[in-house]
Image: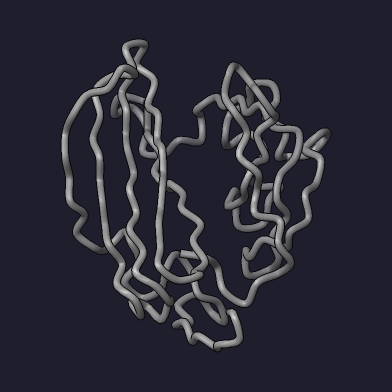
Length: 186
């Protein structure tokens, strides 16, 4: 990056996954409850120091969780850095909504306003290719149970769906479509 080589830990076969050996899911964040015009908030902030997990730059990350009056959960990410550094923030949590009636989420019905998904290779690394969901096990444009077609996907669902622009008033953020990377971003 910018003429300098940075070495990141291989923690997922030949790949660097989720920020390394001690990713952001394994650090202590500063937490601040609050409120905004959109609803009740929880603001989490973490400063990743220059060199942490091999990444360049001091990176300040802020995640704001907002519970809106209509019971929607909104998650907003922001990050600033003092050097060029890769950053790709996401949320991997899921919720079992069966009220204790099921150990898994396979019966949950899901609808995704997404006509495309990101193709992954055998190591589950995104290739940069965006493929149409129509007629595939990735088509959740109408409601389907998660487990209905999951067996058709080797390794199960570990993919990104590209949300359609302006679906139900939401704005679409561009997907990461760079060529195959040797390392996944933080």
